[in-house]
Amino acid sequence: MEFTNEFRVRLPVEAAWDLFTDVERIAPCMPGAELTEVDGDRFHGTVKVRVGAVTVQYRGTAAVDELDGANRTARLTASGRDTHGQGNAEAHITATLAPDGDGTRVTVETRLSVTGKVAQFGKGVITDISRKLPDQFVACLEERLAAERGSGSEDRAKDEAAPAAEPAAAPSKTPGSEPLDLLAVARGPVVKRLVPVVLAVTVLLGVVRRLRRTCRRA
Figure 1: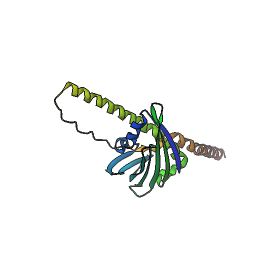
Figure 2: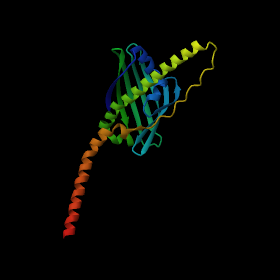
Figure 3: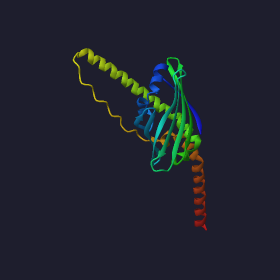
Figure 4: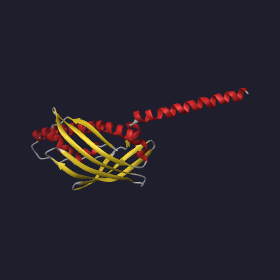
């Protein structure tokens, strides 16, 4: 299946390009994802997806196929396999950045192939999910950028107030990502699909009740 998503970040395009080509900085904001190892242009990690009471974990890699700085376009391939061997996913992604006022417009084109439990949602629901995830990603990204700016201001203030060198703070450990809850993200589309089923069950229950009443009267 193929789909295209667009979102905006409040950064000049040059700064946005530097940010989006730094996978280690943006990985913590990818819903359900956790970066575990970096090997040159190859990135190893996991993605946890929750479908109702079932949590599926994909373990795989992402590789940068091309970085075109002149046109601010990045192409990469990501693949993963369910750790229980019950499905896999592969995605070919092209991201293009363009100036948008004082910010940057990001266009992401994805060609996705998925099997297993997640595939049960079908293209329609997965496309709807893909449209909502960038909102979560951008909100997290802007929160982290604001925290980085605040931390930088505090560090400068400390340096000015205390000339003596202080030991560097230990880097904070990034917590493991919460599983991406597909039912929560796709609640609207899923409910729409369930409405005909609910109506059919309601009608069936009504028929059964009428039959029971008829039998009792007889």
